[in-house]
Structures are given as C-alpha cells and as structure tokens.
Amino acid sequence: MTSPRLREQQRQYHSQWYHETQCSVRGDMPLEPRAALIRDRFLLGLGEFADPALNQALIARAPLFSASLACCSVLFPEQVALSRHVTLSPYDRLCTALTVAQVTGVQSLCSHYAARLAPLDSPDASRESNIRLAQITQYARQLATQPTLICRKALQQLSDVGLSVADIVSFVQIIGFVSYQARVVAGIAALAGRPAAVAPGFTTQQDAEALRLDERPPLWRSRLTLLQPEEAAAEQLDVLDQSHPDARSEDYYLLLAHDAAALRERNGVFNGIHGSNDETSRRLMALAALCTSRINGSRYCAASVAADLHNPPLVHALCDSIDAGYQLAADPRQKAVIQIGSALTRSPEKFTPHSVQPLFQQGATQAQALDLILTSALYAWENRLRYSLGDTLSIGTEDEE
Image 1: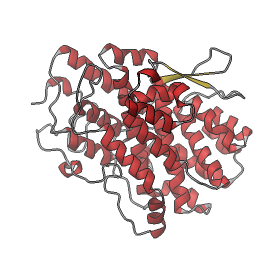
Image 2: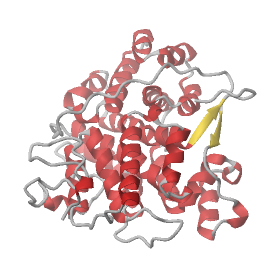
Image 3: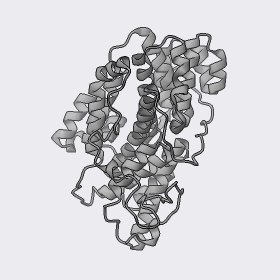
C-alpha cells in the first residue's frame, strides 16, 4: 500500500493520477501499463514516418539515438547495488524521471515513467526517508522547471539528506537527460505532423534574467568534490581521456566522471549532434543553443556558443532578451530559429507541427529542422548540468552566475 507521505498531490490528471506513483486514487493499474514495455525507451514509440525525408534525417542521426537509448539503460538500470556512496535506488531514479516528465507536460514520458515506477516498492516510511524523498523531489522539480532556482544551498540540502557526490552527479544527469528527452520526443512528433498529447495545467517557463557576457570566455568551477585522477578507477580514466583533451584538469569532466557510464553516453549524445555540418548550419545550431541557454540562465553555455554566431550585436541583444534578439535579427531564418528554440525550451508540451512551420517557410529541410531541435534539446540538458553543479566565473573577478 502506498504510504501517506507519497500523496503529495502535485497535479491531478484526467484519470485522477497523483505525483510519485501515478497510480489512480482508486488503486487501479497505471493509465497505460504497456508504456513500461516499450522497446525504445528513448523515442517511446516514435517509429517510421510517412515522410521519407524525415526518416532519412533520423537514420543519419542513428549514433545519437543509440547513445540516447544507452543513457536510458545507464541512468535507469533494473537493479542498483546500493552502498554508502551509491544510494539512488531504481525507485529514486524513476521517481525523479517522472517528476521531470510531469514538469515538461509531455504525456508519453509521464505514461512511460509512471508505468515503470508503479510496480516498485516505495522506501520505508521513516521520518528520514520521508525527508530525503521530499528533498530530492523538490530539487528535481525546481531544476526542471526553472534552473536558476538552484543554488549552493540546494546542493547542500541534497548532501544533508545523505546523497554522496556520486549520487548528486547521477541525480542531476537524470534531470538533465529527461529534460532533453522530452524536447526530442516533442520535436520529432512535431516534425512528423503529430499532435501532442499533453498533461494539463503546466505553466510556461519564465526566462531567466538578462545575461552579461565578457569578451573573454568564462571559467567553470565545481561546487562539489572532484574526482582525483590518482584515485580514479580504470573506467573513469578511460572516459576522461575520451571526453576532452584536457579532461583530467577540467572541473566539469572531473566532476561528471564520478558517474563514468553516464558521462560516456552523454559524450556520445553531444558528439552525435555536433557532427559534420556546413558553416551555415553550425551558426543556426549555435543560435538555437544560445536561445536555450539564455532562457535557462546558463552564462557559461551562452558564452561557449556565442563566438560561433560571428554576430556580436545579435548575441548581446539575445542576452538582453529573446524579444530584443528577435527584433534585431535581419535574416528570416534566424528569426525562425529563435522562435522554435524559444518555444521548445519554454513549453515542450505546446510544441506542435505549427511550431516548426516558420523554419519550413524559410526553406529548411527536415534534416536541418531536426538538427536545430536536437541542439535546443541538448542544451536543455547541458544548461542544467552547468548551472546546478558549478559556478561560472569571469576571468580575474569573483563574479559568478
């Protein structure tokens, strides 16, 4: 029987579902029990489409989708060997995924993670367990809803309820990954002309405050204890060497390597999107990434893609506000990218076939539209990692985001 502490009725759905277990209040089976059995746990049944151009675009990105599916296996294993340093159980992981899915409002994600969570035993009903579950649920909801709500204190509260550094890294990877997954699913459904099935009652994400970018690239510093290479396992050293030439000396990779398997698959997704593209496509993808990072408030990510635009006035206008950037953009293709990047970031559940029409009206192909959607989705993940796990510092100052 579900304990009273789980009845935190965050939102009610058409079938009277409530938050953590997504069982009905009548005690019935989940609304879509077959959603747990779907073979492709990333695209969730989005298969071959009538449009051959879209099918070809998806095939061209097969390595990316393979890495994304591998993330599902890594982040949501059937069993976890729990220890003092690994305390996130399958229940914790799927509960977190369901929380994020509900925030995005994408119904297929809610159904999938609810159906997988429903059969699992909930934690014991002790006071400590109640506090722990409430804390991780609150953190997941805040980071998924509005990344700028997360601060050092929020991370400390995770530590206070018993999460290790490795737990926190895995936990934030889950939040970022499901945020990415929701936007990929919504975006591909829109490209296929499919109406979205959404969970009602979700508000549009509010844009973060204006960003200030310096001429020099910022530094990123971890808020948590880094992995020490001399103490690392072979798998962790291998993934560091595969991640970046300077990964053994960069905070970001030394932190994420606490969960080497998740970092490895994250790298596969990142590299799968940033493949070989022509210069025009790279600039438009950088614009999509900048829009997403601006809305989410990630100064580091915004700065990392700004130079690829080769358009400082547009960059500064966007960092001031999305509307200012849209008004300044002279190229209709840029305006279309700003429109779809903003819509997908703020409200993935409202992203429809109509949302992608501005791109097609400017002559974009299915492959180009897919790349822009994937880029915006990727930075929904990357922004949450960068913003929540570290501080962005201006070189030579004490400023931080």
